[in-house]
Each structure stands twice: as structure tokens, then as C-alpha cells.
Length: 498
Ligand SMILES: [Zn+2]
Image (cartoon, rainbow, N blue to C red; front, side, top):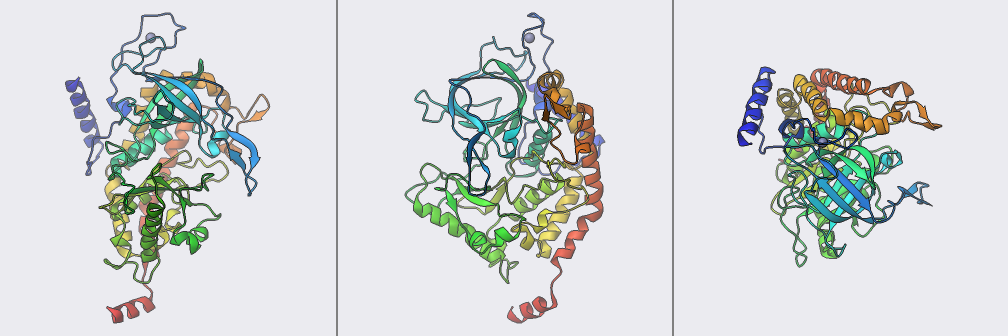
């Protein structure tokens, strides 16, 4: 098998170098399932009506029906509350490296778990996403489980692409981010059954969590000490306020003023069960220290400004991956900030459901930049040095992971890898290509012309968006320099003081 993997790498690198792909500093070997999974022989062992897939196969059997996605109650803003009640389940995972998988095979994982529907706006789609927490037999203690070679952990997200008719947006974006940044969630495609019913192609996604062996690798917390490594999520207001914090950007209304609506709430994700009040205050003031330095007169100063607190490369890459993919939930929503006790703050990507112009109610033109106006970045871009680094890194990435041929090939090869699984997915969910079905409107994208009518159209849409995005960014990236011109006042006063 080693030789086979080696030869795949050789072939891949020959193809890439022929495309003008220049290897950039890749610290790790990111696993790309469509390139590294072994090709499997055609299965002749059984009748045609037996479910048979070359992908890993997950079989979920819940103890009682999965609770509905929403409660019939509204919050104070009139939004229907999410139903996060979990139920017990047994999860089997079939993952032969060399043969196709069937529900009658011997599972490589057969564990108890708690499960619920996950996601925010995606909850309303017929095909649900799920949160899985593997448990020991007491159904309380977490049980670490490895899925298809990913780091053993108890929590997993199961993303079921429904609005994204290509099925591959998240796969591509997470893997791009994983090549570029220190850490991005690892992902694997699988097909899934829920309570005996086939539910289509899913993407298993690592949750950005503390895990010393391959998720966010930060120093383990000690509840006896206030100073701690931490992971904070910036997202919608949480129904659980015990881990919510308010930083300088919250109480100074900076956060509220950098988005159209008040969104972007900080929740401490790690430490979780053992989080103490002292640690909560430490994290609150640690982030506030960075924000005060950033929103200050000497924000760009090496010792007193933002650079003393954040890993600038991480912030540059986070900006570029989200900007390149037009993923504008970033910063207000779906953002993870983490800090190892001995290191500076870094960012981690999360959720590319709406990337490449897939917001339901708004068209995102590929001819735009947006994140430079968001919280933190609106000030980072005042610093010419930061803009320099963004522009330089963009040109570097254009020769590697943002190379157009590389991306188009990546898409084609991923689709080829999924192969018949795409057809099986759409035997189940194909009606969602129709404008309406059984009286329900499935044109989620507005205006309605944006909704693709078949798989090929969906893929063409994604490819066009990438091509147009590249054209725009290539010719306009330098425009970011308009954000950092020094005022006359500042240059005079700053020189006087220094
Ligand atoms: Zn078979």
C-alpha cells in the first residue's frame, strides 16, 4: 500500500507541476480523500438491490425519533428557537480500505452516541445535518472514536449538503484551508442511513475543538489556574449563557457597528466542563487586551499594537481563504479564535455552506471585497504592513492552492471520486432541483434564476464563480492599499512622539 500511495503522490506532483503549481510551505500532509482513498474493484458478491458503496458508510439507529429541528417557541427577537435535544443512538461505521461497503459487513465502529440535528439556517432543509457525540455505555462520558483515519474524538459534525447541489463546497474549502492554515477541520465523505432509510451523501467534519493529537492542539487547561489556553467561537447568540463573554469589542459597540445587524457573540468553547469564573475573566480580558491595542492610536506599533497579540499570518490566511471563497459569514458568525498559552491568537475556519455565492437571499458578486470592513479587519487594514502581507500572500497562493487549473481539476477529480454516490444521493433528494415539489418551494436561492436545475448546472455555476473571482482578485487586490494611507495628522503626531 505504501508504494501505491507513493506513486499517487508522484503522479499528483507531476500533474501539478505541469499546471504551474508551485509547492508552498505545507507543514503537514493533509489527507485528500478523493486522491488518497484506494480505488476499489467492482463488487460482484451480491444482488443488484443490496446497498453497495465505495465510500465509507454510516448507519445510525436512534433509540427514539430524532427531535424536530425547531421548538415551537420564539426568542425575544421573534426567531423560532432551535431544538437541541439529543437522543441516544447506535452508530455503525463501515470502512473497508480495499472493498466496497455494505450494511451487512462487519463495522469498524459500533458505538453508542447521542445525536441531534445541527446547524442554523440549514435546519429547515429536508436533508438535515447532525451533531454526533460518541458515548461510553453510561451515555454520559465521551468515547473517542476515529473515523476514516481522522484523530479519535467524541464529537463530530455530519454535514448533509442540500442547498449546495454540487455536494462539494465544504469539502473543497476545508481542504484548501487545511493546506494553507495551521489547522482546519479534516473532512471525509460518506453515505449514510438513518433508522433504515438511505439519507444520501454526507461530509463528516471534525469540530474545531481542543484535541492534543490533531484538532486544535493547545496546552491542556488546568482548572486551578486562571491563565489558560482557550478556544472561543464567535457566532449567533447562544441559548446557553454560562460560557458567553463580553469583550472590549462588545461593550464598546465596535462589534455591533461593523455588521448590519447585531451578531457576533463570543462563547468559550474550551475550557468547557471545567471552566472556572477566574478563567472566564482571564479569557475576557485577554481578548480585550488585543482589541484595545488594535482599536488604539498606536495599533500598528510592534510592542503596543495588535502584533503583540495575534499570529499575523493566521489572520492574513483567514482573510484570504474566506475572501477568496466569498464566505462572508466569517467574523460575525462561524469563527473560531484560539490561543495556546505560550503563543499568539489564531483563527480557524468553520462552515462554507454559503461559499462561492450561495447565500439564499443575497447575490454575492465575485467583483467585491467585504471582510476588510468587518470587526478587527477594519483596523488591521489600516496598517500598511498588514496589507503588504495580504497582497504578497495572495500572489503566493495564486501560484499554488488558488491556481485556477488546480481548483478546476480538484473539482473534477472530487466529482469523479464520488461517482455513483452522487446519483444515489439524487435518487433520494433529486426533487430539490425542481422549483416546487408536492406544493413546497425548493428554489431557495433568490432571485430564482440562480437555482440550478441539474447537477451539471450546479457544477458550472461553482466553476464560473471561481473563475470570475480570480479575475477580480487578480486585478483588484492592490486596491486594498487604499485602506491604509496614513493621514497627515497621524504622520506628524506620530513622528513627534517617537
Ligand atoms: Zn457490493
